[in-house]
Image (tube, rainbow, N blue to C red; front, side, top):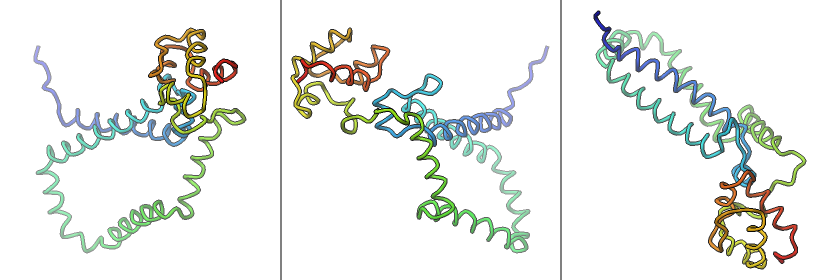
Length: 208
């Protein structure tokens, strides 16, 4: 039996297609996911993946797509050059299409940067969808990235009793409680978010 040779051209095309689909999905998720401070404080997840994981998927898949696009171009360089030579004579004849294509790209780029209609409403709709995840709930952290502060820093900033804070958190069944522990790390070993741990902690008079 003769095994078929590995078809690199097909392989590259399939990777480009698959990575483009993943980029499409992850891009849509990033478009509608809650803002960072809300997502981290409430341990937001979609399909078991948190904000950082979705961001990593989008970034690394984009790099994969770019790398294979370059590979695709290099692998088909001779065909690409032949195509350019063939089309070079037709370039002037198709100048209207070329100008139109460049103009559309320029308008989208400049319009997006300037935040004008109809581009800004698209971004505003994204902000609106981000706000729907926790509408009507008190999910805003006391200050940005509070989940990354150590208990010592948190107690100092909010004028809390550090010893009381630690006792309350230990009684909550959290592991690794210490002055240098972060709410984010403590939450990772439990089924609760940093916001839920903080809210329950603040209901105990011993932390004041």
